[in-house]
Image 1 (cartoon, helix red, strand yellow):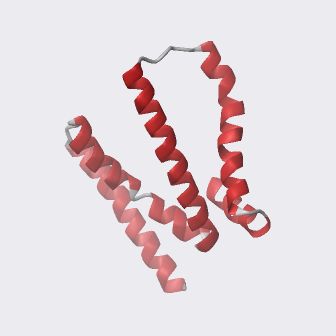
Image 2: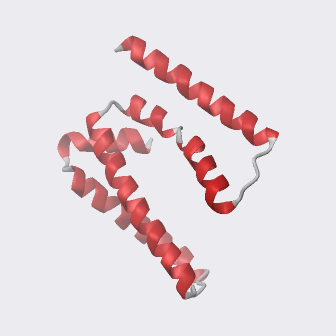
Image 3: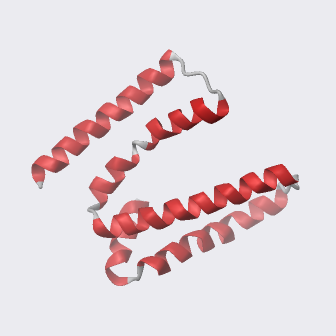
Length: 124
């Protein structure tokens, strides 16, 4: 639903306006929850939080620009590849162990993405 909304907004709004409103709405929505459950981070955690925030904003920026230039169906299908990239990052940086259930689930998601992409390309 978010992809379709961003796509529709991109016809009438500037991409950077859409990008700016996303964190603003998130901030307003999540502020009460954060204040109720506040935990003061140490310096190491604060660096991680800042890094996550920066990369999330970069990702949101490029995703919004991509949604403006691609049909929402194609962009959302490509987004399922994050399972693959998330797995690689989990193995490399967090020493996660991949089990058979994960492999089966990731394979199904990847297969579904390939099937959806193939059908979208045939329609074009």
